[in-house]
Length: 455
Ligand SMILES: *Cc1c(COP(=O)(O)O)cnc(C)c1O
Image (tube, rainbow, N blue to C red; front, side):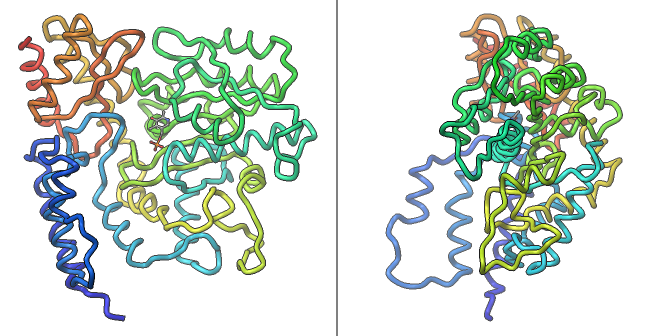
């Protein structure tokens, strides 16, 4: 095989240039979609181009249209950065090109996945033996876990979804906090379960346990799934797991926890109190591409009883070479899949227990610094208790807040985003990058001060 090392060398050089530019480049992109498409060239070429030249073209055409998402001053959405060990491991994953579905066909990929699975479960203090499916992100992790939950509660009610589908079944009732992430509603659509029933949340966005109890006791005979949340995208708040899970289990419900970024609070002695009792749930979804800082895309679908996950996700095929010990594809919706667990293994191997704890503590510490700094700005107000990595602030009335959001983007020092929370326009900050430094926080607070002083 001629692997065109020239193309790989150039990709490496472009990648290093990009990473070197992150500390100082403006966070927003300079080019538009149309500008980059023009630079790439819109005509499909009639014949071949040297791969090294293709890489050069892709890099130079794309560069002005790249958003500095992996930079230490990107605080939009919940994005995460990329730890160097995970990035480098991801390159190897592409080069090795293992289809990581079958245990014995790709032993290296399976071994990495087995070890990463055990480490994640151990690090988070979840029940030993829980299964981890390495999926594309939080949405698919929620999908995978809630599929296992749907099938399990119906099975207990004497209904086999795999054989009979949902039509004619007793149905499944899904109770969610009023402030669950919207992707939970999306996956319930995929699962044929329709809209969930919202349960009241308190002023921080946490499920109110008495309201959950009242819903569970209202006489609805259907099998029930309760979906809780570790980390509200606005306030960062965590549902009261110990109490909520106890009540839900008393009523025979399957309890799921969406912890896309917040599950990793469980890896820190200083923040573990936020997830107290979460280990009693039946399934947990998280992202590795958020708090854990592996590159896109990587989510973690964790299910207490591996048999429940396998029952929902497994298949058999005469041409597959399946192993009695269980195959990686039996834990995820996909059959063919890259070995993304290698990125999780790499970051955990590089950081170790103390490194992950320090990572979580640093992010939450920066969020606390933001909260203090913002509260000191004229007219500004942080709208919730800052318990983890998220901060939502108002700068007075909604127009003024939206103006600050817009001026922050124009300024380009940092990326913060706007949203609406509790009927108020807010500026949102999410700290989720390993590389965010004290200096990044200070520069962002300066920019916020300038944006809040104008207009
Ligand atoms: C980001 C997020 C999701 C969705 O995760 P993706 O990786 O974007 O699919 C789900 N729930 C919560 C709480 C999130 O923060």
